[in-house]
Length: 269
Image (cartoon, rainbow, N blue to C red; front, side, top):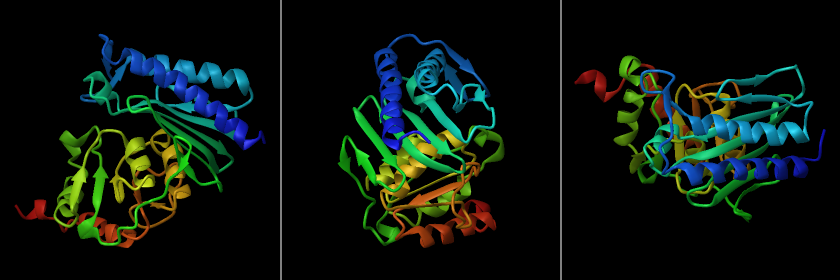
């Protein structure tokens, strides 16, 4: 396998190239398309993905690629780049500056490199498996909050929320048990904020590999814990993700269990 530091540097450069373009274009009149009723994609999503693919494919032509905007170059390789060229597209389309570029690298069944770049704040998160997590070159770690009642949490809602109402029960359960719950609109940044100790925990449903590949590794390397809603170790194909500082994880699992069995305040209104 290629040297992990070389892979990291390549991912950082690709993310910065795409992020710089996004930051430059956020105030322009970008063309918006609808992939679903409320699921947006812009011309900048596609351009950012092309920038990343062209750069990384030029360096690693034998690697596979998986990206949100229809990129699925699958030859069965043990090496795969997993790309979200613009996580937070709805924010970007509304000129709300909370969005990022996310690039993860998989070797067989393990994510071994992760980079998340937030161009609006010039914040670059990265991790190499076994090497810790970093923000702008400085080590980061999860928070030390052990009480759910004192925890700041984050979540997101799936694009089919108008019809499925998924996560509303969980949200109501958490907002009455935690100190507060935030909804920023970028799963990758939410996870990075858990890694940096800004959030104590995060949960979300119906995610995709490109949402969590890089940032999930960053959480784990910062000392946090990632699982599904039943407490099983998170795998790249699982859509329901729970991440925390580890100290409140069991309390978050208990709260999620209330919603999974239908015991939530929303059901009693």
